[in-house]
Image (cartoon, rainbow, N blue to C red; front, side, top):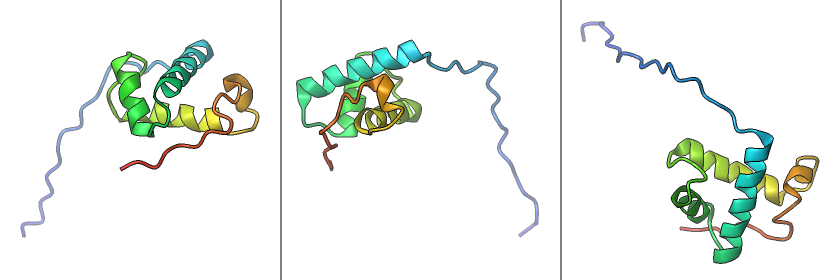
Length: 97
């Protein structure tokens, strides 16, 4: 071993990330509810794929995270439930393969 360390060059993105507005999040959650109502029961992955086909989220880990977060908020009681309206109250995610 020579003791030298090689590093891959870091890629810097000059594109500024833009957060979703509250209105955009609410619209995405309403559309997600439509997806679930049409295909219930569904796994998070199934909801994610339907959301990407409909252009609600990007087909990347960040899009999957958005769907997962939205489903969690929509199913959870609490202060954040007020904006989602507890849309999934009484529904539990399906454990998929």
